[in-house]
Length: 278
Ligand SMILES: O=P(O)(O)OC[C@H]1O[C@H](O[C@H]2O[C@H](CO)[C@@H](O)[C@H](O)[C@H]2O)[C@H](O)[C@@H](O)[C@@H]1O
Image 1 (cartoon, rainbow, N blue to C red):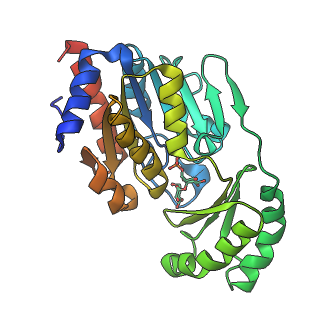
Image 2 (cartoon, rainbow, N blue to C red):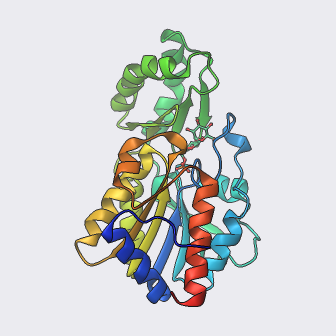
């Protein structure tokens, strides 16, 4: 498989560093829209064909492979099918934007404390949706955060705009943050995002290079953190999938692909390049 189109010098340097020194590399990816195609029902998300095999091939030679997701870690492990997949003993799943950490090596999850505001928001949310005229918006209760989805409503974009202000107010009143995603508004704990999660991962692994793939606004924090860490000598490759149409992300990327199948192509190409040493 040929090398994907790397549009930036920093991206080319990152790719070369991973091929030259795979033991110093961390390969990380978002889940929804990046490793798994977007679907109407979040419970039906599955890893794209070949995604886990590509991660497993990379895991043979790199320092660590990781999924960094807004889902609870155990939900992501179950939906993605990573548990028991051969060759993924080095995988970590950072759930809830990094609040949780699941390790394949132990099968256990550790978590930062969950702020009390989530319980208060859960109690008030139905009334807020009702008074916004959108009682049928789907609420994905993730225990440590709440995601309000509009994808299955008659006017998904309009509903998202209608809900933005009342949900911001609700989040602020209980000391949470409202974060937008692809036809979703999430009430999340403050102080953690994928940028914080990636900085922790770089620190704990001692990574010399990182590939991160994402598709949505929640992945911007990871892109920004890695772009900053380049200033400290980290080599990085930023891969954006167009699944969610987040232009801020595609504009900041070193490689842009259409969808999770494109991400699989990139991961496979990297595994091939590492296998032949260039
Ligand atoms: O960080 P991620 O792994 O990308 O998770 C972000 C959110 O993804 C999920 O929602 C998105 O995917 C759904 C399934 O394809 C789709 O129906 C929805 O419209 C998307 O926004 C998930 O349901 C959220 O909990 C995640 O936080």
